[in-house]
Length: 115
Length: 275
Image (cartoon, rainbow over all chains, first blue to last red; front, top):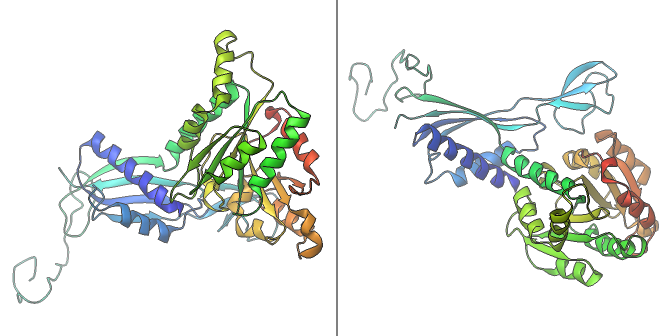
């Protein structure tokens, strides 16, 4: 599954930060996985557990924010929340919608132990 | 043992005190039982590194007149068969256009061999257990193609302003309607192939893929008399997810609709909007 590729990339971003900011252990990793990001959060946690041992992420608590998908509904002339790109407007049932947010997978920040 | 005053029984679990405030350290951050921690801001898109490599590929392709297409589908939709038919058709209609293929599969060279037998150079990328091609793989594969050598030879004498009449690079991704949608390779457009044996509701089941594509090819239309596939419904559902999606219907084995697909390919890359 691609969550393993994503976990490996997250680890790489954290390790780059460790070299830059001089820390060795992460206490908490905060991620953002929007509803439209194409990421299955359970699978991502599983993948992070698989790549963490022996790295600065070992033992870290992982917090994943899951902001809703946002899309513009032309009929309602407003931004609405959706769970997937296939969803119709929750207000008027109209399609198509234009996704405007909640489509990113991001590393937000880290809480790191003092060296 | 009570953490505040040390009372209690040794074999009981420790009771937390009423208030343990770790929020007074410099980071104003706390986790139970931990000394003050330092906050390190990252704010990075996880796919950012791939995006940078993809953008580099894109600039490289554009500077040298290479139109690159990322072909995506489930396993067995007919990508390789379509590519072989496409190569044969292009050699008839536009023999002056250099062609090349980057083949992605978990294992084997089988597809690259079919492409070479059809008359185009191919680089096989085996991803092992990986389920999608990424921009780094495509960049490295492109560097090994004669297409790349050819355009650079041109570039030595005629920097950038002169290049061969539109080279075509086909990137056949790993058969997978899920993961490859997220990985930009630097292509001019994603082309998603759905065959009529797969069910017309796939655009709703795999919305990310159909939203990312510029063109939908409905393949194996020679089998329509034998399957229950509602073409109009498929197109309607696909446009629900992606109103700008272009659609062509064809049969790679029988040749129906192939001309329209070749027409689409031979148009200038500038007309193709990456999704």
